[in-house]
Length: 456
Image (tube, rainbow, N blue to C red; front, side, top):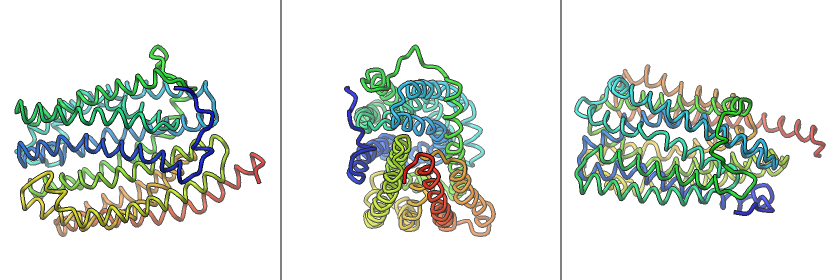
């Protein structure tokens, strides 16, 4: 691949380049969701409701706890690499690349071992129904055994996106997604391996995707390139990655902990409710994949234009991305509310599960628009290098408020409606905080940097 003479992220028409960058990420996250949903869909249809609850519910929350923390931690590499790439700093760009890959390898080993060891204890602490603890433990231990492959793929694909390549991660994901579905059908339906078969299918597909992304980085013809013998930690860059990424990792950790507390409350309502919440989570992920794609897009745009000192372009990018995300959020809310019952039937034929799932959809989906401001503004601030304040606002407004709600409000009225009310309440309050903070911060930021660089 030859190096591009023009960086469209820093030069092209903003709305067009945002869309060109956004859609491959969106399709990638769509296939990522299909990738993750394959286990749930096939197990739920061919093994039964307890198996559906076993591969979702508490299991899904534990996976998110570890994976999202590391993804947040490693997001510092995305910001740094985007800035070095925008500034065309080849030396530091490649050092950051090798440091990030080293972090994914070491992180995958450490978190995989910890997850394997503590899985049974965490499941019991969450009050997981006793009839699914054993099979949930087996599934999770298989998953954690291959966690290193997931970490390598996520970090490698984020590196490619940071330099403006959002297409190849998509191609790799599409291939591994269909491989995962094929192996799910083979192991679960044909060989009747049940829940463990779904775990083996996922790990195998993740290993293939990790190999593909490493090959892409190895064969790059741009100013970045992976050399396996150079994979190591560069101390100062590792500190920079952790400094930027740790607040995002802690934020993700707090999100996951608050969701675990919510899942624990859900578990007390029985297997049917757990299965309904699991099925909804897969549908709900359709929105989060769109939101996440906008988040990656704007963070990359802000990072590269910051490196190129194109501050006016940064301001315009934020406005365009906000409008896009608001429009899509409203559209998706309408689609899910009107077509939710059909989507739920993909996962189960149990009418009781579908009825509970629709109650969840009607309560959560209309509030998606509130999270737009949190997602876009926090990602913009991270692209500027401001990570601590967004983390504190998100953890306080979303996570801690949600935990307080569950611990002190729910015991007085344990119902699915009361449990779910914590989402729109926490989203709305945090969105207000971000709008106020961002308005004052960006004025100071652009005034200061324009003065330093002699830009009028």
